[in-house]
Image (cartoon, rainbow, N blue to C red; front, side, top):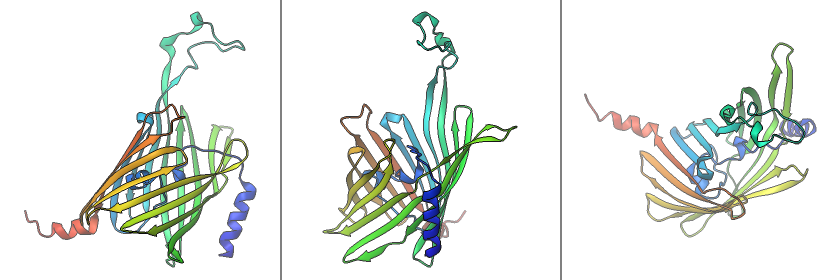
Length: 296
């Protein structure tokens, strides 16, 4: 434990004020989490494979996630961003209307590709390795980082998780491959604590993240949600978070598969449309056992 505390301290000393709105660590990767306000749902090595598609702000931002056991792969970002670099000649006063050549306005994408692998240590801790490849316009960046989280613990009737994301986390943007000049982004570690309690056939979760913003202040990003059991196979989900007004959804499950859907309502002070998230999960071991009953 002292070893991990040393790494965390060193990480704080080396990191700078980077605010990455596309940090996969802070985004919900399942419809269940989205419907419950984005609460923390731990990685479980349960032999299941799942796919999730998130469309935020009316499709402006999308996230596709594929998870098997303790391995997660995601592609997320924004497509068709207008590029006006070639549309006019820049000057201090800006272009006149007649100087803009609209035929030279093109589009580009800003996307991140993440691969995260978690390893369970003695059923007490989960150590995560996060690798990232970023593409913005014609520029590529790549990075690594570590996550350190506890497994589920219990304290006076409450289950809880504690974690730290982006330990020694960085991203490198090569400027010139020949001269080997680079821009290096170093990330401030983010703390997470998640409390959950079962009450009257419902699971209630409160998750708190510490976030670094551009004003050199730390803010608390809260997510709170509930999962209510209507039947053995049907649950309703709802929640709220710092950046969403309200979210709700449902979960349908049996021994073979699980389907989740969520609808996220944006805050009134944000000029964005609402979002949705859909996930489907298959139990591979159950599928294999059932396949033995089929013959050609």
